Image (tube, rainbow, N blue to C red; front, side, top):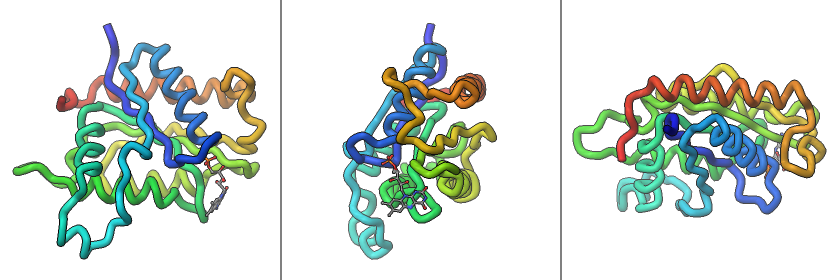
Length: 197
Ligand SMILES: Cc1cc2nc3c(=O)[nH]c(=O)nc-3n(C[C@H](O)[C@H](O)[C@H](O)COP(=O)(O)O)c2cc1C
């Protein structure tokens, strides 16, 4: 019997992305803890840069509708975002912005974010990791989208040397913190309303 449905994604498409690696590790730990995990790449949801004129002219593109449905089909999500200029990547922000503009008939605004729980991570080559990206993403999801965001988060500094050959975290305390975050994500996602198909 599987646990809640959890979506996992990274805010980077870079080959060898540290955040892609972090997302893969969290997906593995979620699956080991018996969550029903879906890992996606934003490469499969190509979206133009959101501009209000474009939105007014043509509405959200199909990829935005698909991404919104994908989110809505899960009770929780883990997002690993790189830090770009003390914030999240434009790729991730643009995707979130588009999803907020998709509204089915009679649906409340931000329906795909409300009643969902999010856990956050960031990996950066810098010693202090992606703390600013984590703060920015928390603000976007909590304040901007009305989501529940776990206080537990994973910040991987010196990311080029943080993973071992098996793609696990070398630092034992960080590895334990990641497992604790995964457990909390599963526990809270389990009490969220059932996801839409
Ligand atoms: C435009 C740009 C801005 C960046 N700004 C920051 C930053 O403010 N802080 C930081 O730690 N790293 C910064 N970086 C470095 C990225 O965080 C680093 O390349 C990281 O590995 C990207 O994540 P990825 O490996 O998942 O692709 C920046 C990189 C780019 C391309």
